[in-house]
Image (tube, rainbow, N blue to C red; front, side):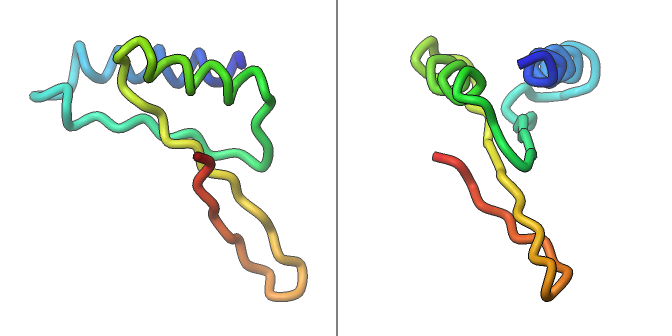
Length: 73
């Protein structure tokens, strides 16, 4: 949850200081695992008409030594 708060803070800073258009900013969280608290917070965020956060889980395949990405919906 602490890292998610950092992402949101960075998102707001980018929108206020760097983005020409706030619609150009798309926050993305990438992790091996997301706690249920984080997933619930992100789902509620869209209920309040705030910008959605894409949640991407990664899986490391030891045999192929590759990373697979999966969007959490």
